[in-house]
Image (cartoon, rainbow, N blue to C red; front, side, top):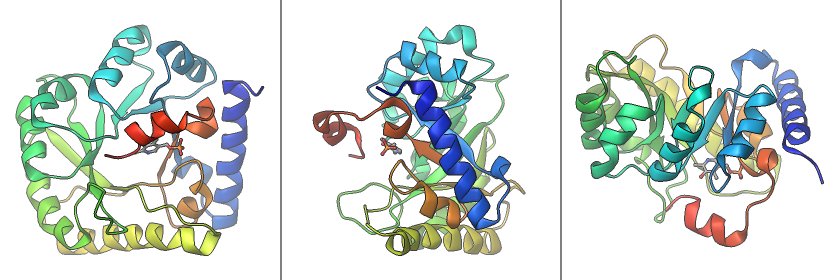
Length: 243
Ligand SMILES: *Cc1c(COP(=O)(O)O)cnc(C)c1O
């Protein structure tokens, strides 16, 4: 059975090959290891293998792992990539470095108000329902510019870009389409919104099954779970992968 370090090496090779095909420097793409359903000991193996960027879907599960890995706190960047309820914003604002999955202005306002003084600004992405699926959270593309402009004005946050979880598609060309749409949306928001910082340049997109297509379209963070930690059970997936 492949170990976590083996998996990471394989994913790193996939990323490097995809960057080469896309004519992009490999340093432009961050590998985020998505640890949902995995325990802190498994994440620690990934840190030992050199990984620095970790994503968690659930606030409680993420907080527990941040605490378990507190000795590595300075080495690790923690992203929340799942839904944020209002009653959890304080804990999130105190513990995480990034929230990739903000889809309402109200949540951003609370995160800004509650960000611990003395910590750097919380880095934020707006989640976009890029495939327009009724079952998925995220802003509709047409809503993003107005929310981005309002979020950019909040003091304790730094709006870094956009995140999406496209509907699964098979075939490289079909997989590229939603990623291209997210990239084009990022460009148009950058052109139309006042007050965005110069580093509004993050495209958090691409998972184990479509990372090459995402990189071809400009992904700067790929969020990889099963290809790093091994397959999750179908039941675990049904309850975690986007509610
Ligand atoms: C689970 C999950 C991932 C990783 O999915 P894999 O297919 O296991 O790579 C990425 N992003 C989000 C939001 C997820 O919930």
